[in-house]
Length: 414
Image (cartoon, rainbow, N blue to C red):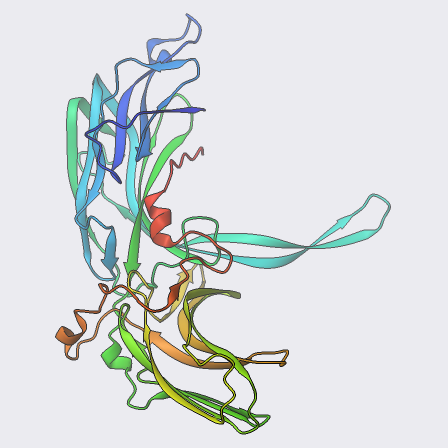
């Protein structure tokens, strides 16, 4: 059914999730009963106003209301936190019956698998094709009670006017971090609350999702190592050592990278690039995302026998999923999920076909219980400097935050 977009009313704030309820008339035959001709409709929309149009019209001009509002305006929560909010409806009709209204919370993982498909070409020849199978599996599904339902059937009777109900639920203590995007980017982990309203004259369901960003708490004090992280290359008369001041880091923090280089045969060093990479693994899927990269300020066409310098690297601020390993329960088995990071160094040598690669694993956390005050200036607040930020993934899907900001209508027909 087509949707017609109209101007956004001034009272609708950007990002508000809204619900309109009204009476829907069919331009059907005269023999239809009043109940068959007239039916309640719930239209869900975000950042805009939509109405249904195709031989149907709303009996009264719909009015806007804020459909679902969370106690955290940025929709960000830590695992184990309590989520509270308000569900709102506005009824423009005299009397309204909502059949089977449901509300809940879902955690979903998405990943792909390669599968061989066998078929015959009509001449008795067997053909084998390798196809990609997309999996979208809910590993957590928490139905939530909807207040004011009648007969325990989630049926809601509404008089004309505005109606609202508070809700609250507590997130499980251990959850993998939101990752990926809401676009078709695999693998991913995403969370959302949902509201569905069933309609009576045809078997369909309007479903609106409200995305949430959820991270587990990862205290870097508990995983901090005393020794410096180090990577080394020693071949073909070239010796490179890289030391990282610490392995466990918070978003927005600065870390020091110590580079030692011995160039016995005076090879021409064209440059050294530092790259922080996020790795997402679900089942057998693996995706690498560049968080940032920086060309270290090395003298141009360096040919000296020795080089030593300490560089400051600024880890990007914002919603960086922390390093985490989680076994997601599904059916009678579990699915492995993992997020981890590495600092990768690429040394470029003139006339060498391949670059030299060094790798230092790093841990991204969300907080530090040790001397928390000294991190506050940098944690989740500072803007990274002196490097080029790459906000896109290698395959260029949108970030999770931008995908949430631009989420569109989701209409599911059962």
